[in-house]
Image (cartoon, rainbow, N blue to C red; front, side):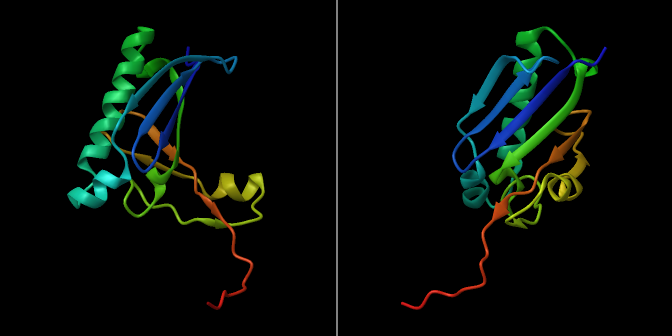
Length: 133
């Protein structure tokens, strides 16, 4: 029975994955000091992809489960930027849940894991005004 969710938070300098149970209890966390900064320096995202894979494998090992028991993988943060794993265009605030859900991108990355990862877009402000200095 698939009863776990994994969230992936990819930032500038760190990547963190958390395993949750079906009651929304945090079970385990795994972190690597790798982020989109490394992609910018390296010129590719291979180290970032490897960090996500390592974190996911560590979570499953700690919980003594397999991907067969994971129902959903959700990723957010800088991991969806142009130097992340997959670029997902930002939404303009305000953005309701329907827009966020419809703008989420699901992609299979077998080099990371056998399940699709759902990448949530970031949200930015854009009031249309310009600042003069």
